[in-house]
Image (cartoon, rainbow, N blue to C red; front, side, top):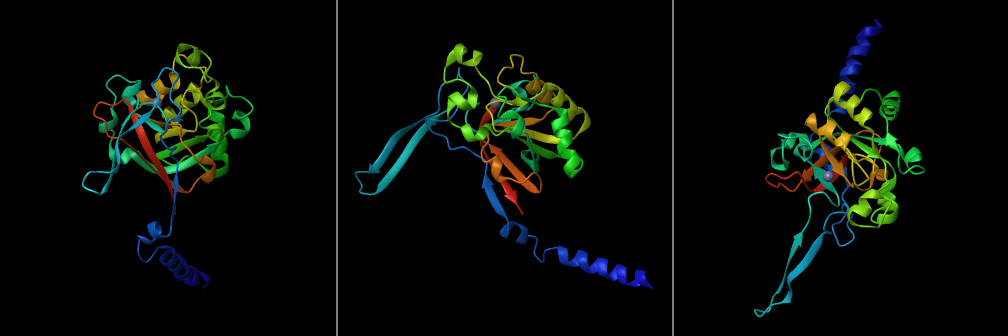
Length: 264
Ligand SMILES: [Zn+2]
């Protein structure tokens, strides 16, 4: 007798959980900007030229109306930015070739800040990723993994955020910030199916790296990465959507990135 009640009840729950208008999910959700503003303080690699934004014209022109226009110049890999596979993989996709479907996906946050803040040379391990899975289940297929080291709170102070305010080769030699361990990258590309990895430091490899092995492993597998991303402390550890839209530079190994999260 009981089962005759259970089935209609299940149908009712299913019907009620589906929004009347699917666009209601978008209307009632919340957007979170994960992008740092580009300005003279934007963090670039010690060997890079800083971001510049110069006035072409700003003010009232001779016709009497207000007008402003500026020009900017930027290296690909500074500020909040996107890494395309060709950055470290010969024959890999350059920015404009990365399929638009790979620029969005279900996001998760792996919070390792309690380990990384006291140890700027910390490398995120496969077991950090597995700890997330113990709490929430297997990393979803086609997920975008955001690594929260906690270093975002130091941006854009170069000394605390990257370990050094020096520029050039001397700056590179003194970099200290956390990243993803190559073994963890290998575990991800071998055992899980993901679209991208992002984090709140200047590089997916930790600051001490000289062989950039994590970059090489991820990009050989066709993945992309987001570096210097903001506001990870405002995201839950699961249950949101990421859209990461880089400037579409032909042949680009990377590009300035506008990245946002959507919380339904
Ligand atoms: Zn990069």
